[in-house]
Image (cartoon, rainbow, N blue to C red; front, top):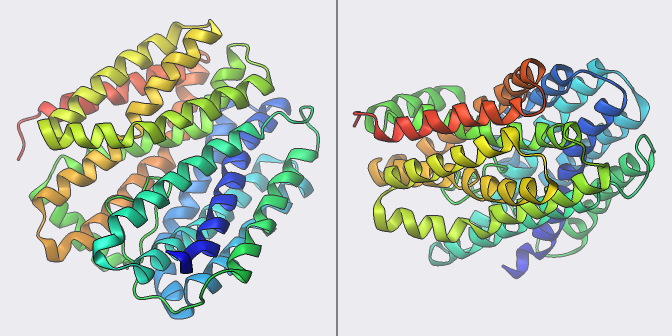
Length: 388
């Protein structure tokens, strides 16, 4: 793992910048008096770009190596971040989100490729556990940087770009440069690391295999993607809508995302003991209860507490779903089916912000968690459905 010190350090900094950018963009659009629907549509473009990149960037990363790929796609991400300072229209921001999503696929593929190439099989679980820890630490840290300047100030967009640029330094100066073997999707990779090198034909074949051995996994994975993307894109809008100032939004987002990190291990252990589907059902039901409270809660202490629980639960769903699939699929097809699950997750992610914003437009700020309540109840019902 020492050879990956530069790559993982750069990754943590870049994820921090990407986390800050996602929330900052939602709040800046609100400050510019854009509609909630406009916010959802712009944020959905990130996942559209992600899906586009997922079909073809793996072979490029394999050819040039993880360090070079990380620097190239990290630079493209920084270049896109400059555009948020240069343009001030939803159309421009939508195009920039497409570019950001596309380039982040390259970043995530580079990281997974580097980790897979640098560690032996018996250490891969620990390596990807570290990868997950760094992901959520970076995401949470990015939220705490929000609100350090006045709304509308150019400082925070500049800070985002600075983080993206600084992220290129460790990978360029630290660690061994090596060519990677073919990047492989990992069941332990977090949803935010949606990267897959599979081409369209293999993805379609993987989808057929999923529907054969674990038919509920496809709709479940779409649901998990819907919940994840709407949280990142629209929870800042929800918090602003119920009266949180920008500084409190950053505090709330940073704290609740720590819940996503703390819950991974105990929920994983629970799924080993009582089964994946029972765990998905229990987690979804409790998350639905939390979502129901969030539709009406307005006291900051109550909102923070329940939101912490909601995130701690919903952010474990993807891992439970992937574990269920890997319990059933043939070992020789695990990489292919995991890659397909990642793409299916991103399809849900692309739709989530737009659908969630429609609920908010119709029902107000609490409509976001009416949407979440609908999805979590559907997942709970799916866990009990009479399918194989």
